[in-house]
Image 1: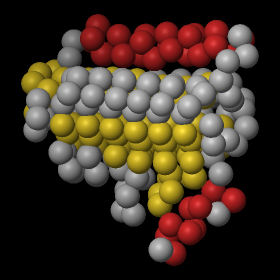
Image 2 (image 1 turned 135 degrees about the vertical axis):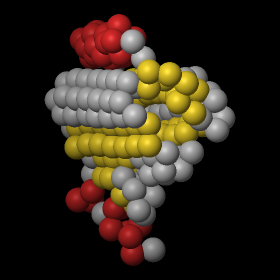
Image 3 (image 1 turned 90 degrees about the vertical axis):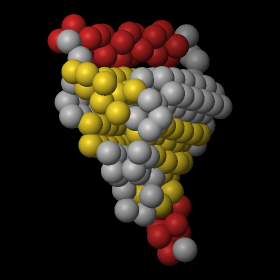
Image 4 (image 1 turned 120 degrees about the vertical axis):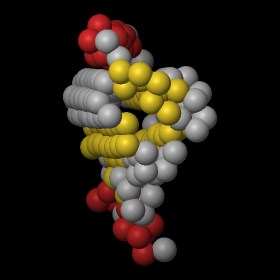
Length: 183
């Protein structure tokens, strides 16, 4: 209970960079860092109540996704990460320029190497280590193959597309950004 109290104190409010987009109905609670150009979309929940969550620059957490933590593991997303609709990213580390497909689940202690793709619906099991540039599929997940350089580059392009979309929303006065919030 003491751990929970620690992260629910006022000093554990989220850090939100000035150009972050948070959609109405998204929940960002506790020790959460949203870095420059990142976005959190409708119905997403980021709950940093017993450990911290970091969303790297230009990353996005799409509609209905959940990011959570455990006592032993924070939830860390690198830069230009795309978390697809309804994905669950739990107490793990996701490297730069990774695409987490719709409905994918990544469990505690997993480490996802940079420029990888976690396919839609995949179940990445506890403590799985995914090498850089991998395509991961299935339930339980397995590395299917190494991605081509073009496939790897597409992850960053998709993340940057979401940066542009979120800027349009902010320009229209939709959503929140730039202040500690619980939307």
